[in-house]
Image (cartoon, protein in one colour):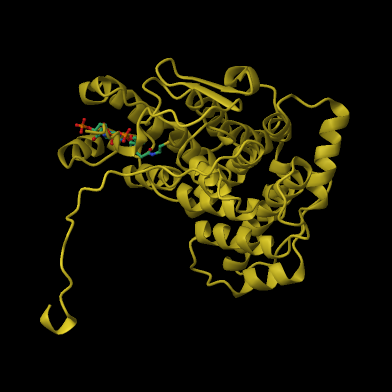
Length: 378
Ligand SMILES: CC(C)(COP(=O)(O)OP(=O)(O)OC[C@H]1O[C@@H](n2cnc3c(N)ncnc32)[C@H](O)[C@@H]1OP(=O)(O)O)[C@@H](O)C(=O)NCCC(=O)NCCS
């Protein structure tokens, strides 16, 4: 009998040189660089270049990438019309999916798969998606959209378009770090979805839309919103313990804890935790950090979590970080997408460069040989 691994757990389905994860040691490596090496120094734009080209950019290469992205940040009047026509209560993740699909309609490039053309499409998706999300969020708040600026980084420009004021250096750095840490994660569900779509020789926009759909569920990118909702439900640090007991009794999962691959602390979590603590130190209200830190401490000491090797994942401290940057909870998962587009596009380009249709088999366990019954006799 064929051995089935539910959820393809631990099944190796390909080779790639973009990202390495050691789940037991809690290690994450982008293109040979350990995340601890990148997190303190790299900007998101440098990570994009690293993922797409396999090496860190020199100054000229970084400036060229920046120019390409900046030139593609704006939305045309048709894009804006579509966003204006979206229901204001639409889920932002659905807006993200529809928005990327729509910019694909205006892609002037042919459906070709060479690296140079793919890079243009990747630039387009990476540069325009933040504008789509900020524009939608402002429309639904009854505010006029704010056009992108050319003189701001990817992170700062997004906060500018969202809030209409330049972010503080701390806020820009916090969002930039977030984007760096979430940019790539090997064959996770959304990246695999992108690869499956790309393997049919579908275009880059279609492949990224597949990724956005796969990211939206709470076993993947959707968890970050639910993590914030749970911290808000806890409400204050004194309520962490009773809330946790209630969770155990009702067998409810704690959002932002556990990972399919990491059986040690997710290496991105300490970087995010430190940044959240720094942001909290500057704010009048450090309660989100205190609640998250307390819940981490309690789960870390509990045998159920110890035995199952359940630790905070990337979403756990992303939630208070994005909240402290002023984002609505339902914008958190689209933020994940804004970063992961970098990794998705790297994988899609790698898939095109060495493609074979991804087409697994399944064991059929249903009946055979049934006889047709006319409709009126059923
Ligand atoms: C991420 C996740 C889907 C990985 O799941 P998985 O590898 O399929 O692990 P399983 O669902 O098989 O869980 C293994 C055990 O740990 C428990 N568990 C896993 N995550 C848990 C959590 N967040 N809270 C409480 N218990 C959890 C399961 O109940 C199960 O217990 P059991 O052995 O008694 O049946 C899972 O940890 C989860 O649902 N986490 C919360 C959502 C989340 O943060 N998602 C973002 C991932 S980056």
